[in-house]
Length: 202
Image (cartoon, rainbow, N blue to C red; front, top):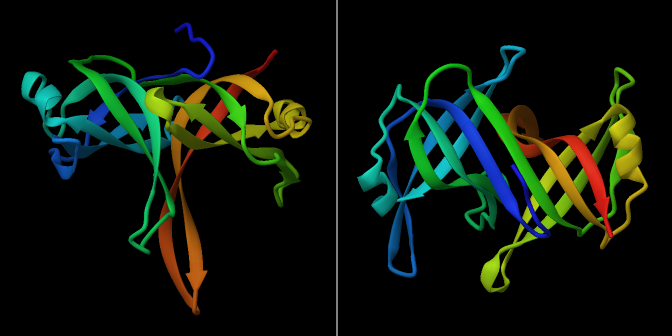
């Protein structure tokens, strides 16, 4: 995939876990949502939430258990319900087609850092760096996408500054974690971009 400044391209191939359900309406267009399961080579599975317009699903209907390839963009929106993550990350589908064979998960993003990088080491000693990338859409909006890098790439990302423009290649992944509030533990899912390659743009 080729990309230009402030572009957002993702291609995921996996299994539809549940039939689409009504999600929301925006500017007269109705959207439905469904989870997509994408296996990694390691056997770990990412569960990604897909948003698709009803008109797209009418042309290319999907159902639970179906293998599909989805091309689109990674989108973010603020969750104001007070439940779950405050920043919700989804895959906005632009095309859906039947697929066979191995699952796939690749994306390219180009945007600017909107927060200072957070570099640290895990309890096991692995280097890790968190970034928040702002990727402009048309019409003046932007998606704010959490990204994560490991090892030598984490050290490179730690040297970036707010406003730096970068191009990232990676995968759209999910991970579960435990959040403790008022003495009660709940399982939650975080969505982020795992960075495989990073280039700084002029």
